[in-house]
Length: 230
Image (tube, rainbow, N blue to C red; front, top):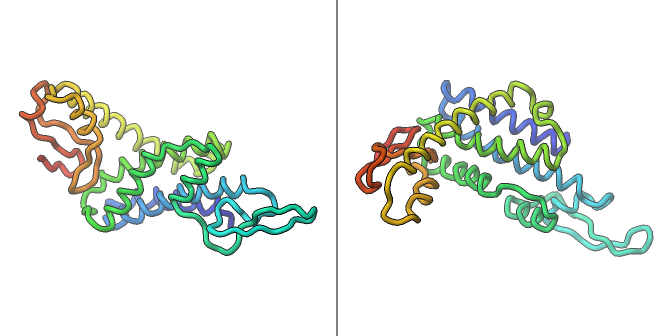
């Protein structure tokens, strides 16, 4: 099985996990794990394609060695079974000038880490933001670098779920921004920080002020997932 097929399978499993969260909240954890690992595998599959022919997948290997090719030239080849991690992929993409919205993927990684140690799995809506970030990365990378149609690659059912979640999330995100923009802030640096804030209970990143059109310090803020007010 190829790395690309492993990536497809992992992302498809992540979406299947999402659909089953209502029946089993623990599926939220596996959903995020599968999406994150699937995206990394998607990246690695491209690095394999870009690796020099006969280099034993040089660009994804942790270790390499210099050998002489059939023409007597020194070349690098990958050795061992170990492959690069998230940081290694970032570094390799930088060298190869491959552009990715790392901020979105870092949000997925952060949520994956936090959901396993801190956040409750009682608020499945929180994972919608993660599916949206994942969708944006997968869609752009598949089209721009793999040169493939993501609908054909992942299947119509999976892609329709991604689209549905993206539409709902973006509508709620816009509402939150409108509410935040309508308030007044003592310092212009405060608003961008609030827009980037996430709920400390569930990790969801849609935070909305309870009151609109007031001084920001006079209102409290509500998470649209777990409805915690602070």
